[in-house]
Length: 353
Image (cartoon, rainbow, N blue to C red; front, side, top):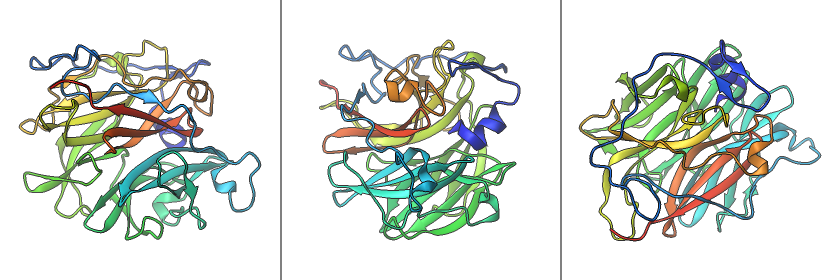
């Protein structure tokens, strides 16, 4: 998320105040609702939006060590911003650990119940091994397709950020490809509810970027990416800063409802916070017929910081997500809380059609 590498780059010219919220300014088109978006009576959400979400009572589910040892000092004092995918009943997680001095690495953990995770013994599994990563590898997104895991994350060299990629057959041993898109961050590959990337128009698609630079890229093979063009989320200036997070297609929001084949893109940022939080999470919709200009957006967050582990931390008043997965008839949103710990929120399918 914006933390560390991104905070330095994105917040030049913005004011960070003690409560953890920020103010910035730039011109943006006014937001609008889709004419076809009918609200659910039970949730207040339009038919295309996923939610509402409920925090897991056992949060936070992953925390940094209280007293770091040689094997865990890479994730102290913060462990946060995970990517998760479920394969054969196992939850595979990649998460960001930030060591003293703000140098980040990526560790792995697994779970069979989605609540209790066991870190991999060889952590970190993705380290700062390439020239584009000398100051950190951050905020992993995790996907699975045809027997292979794909991780997209931010590579930070101390000055600029890139979208870097790594591939694996077991989610523990990773081959680091390096930058696949330069000078940006926040890879949201369009995927099905199980975290498997899907092709639209013969290509895999990726929404990426943050305030002032959001784009769509395409790939024939999930490893070679080219930018198609700029994406207009139609956010007003008061929503800044914001970042793209997760893109889902082929999903349902209600128990007996139809499958939505448009794209639900989760975003995080100031959004409609009116300076009451640093980052909250919301959603916007894209049509397959109009991939670069949103057709609808929420004007409320589906998750905003209010729990103590979200209000306090390295970055106060902050929640940020990298992945979402549908499993056991509910949505599992793993997210970073306060840039310090990992938490979980779930959403069931809403009743009705």
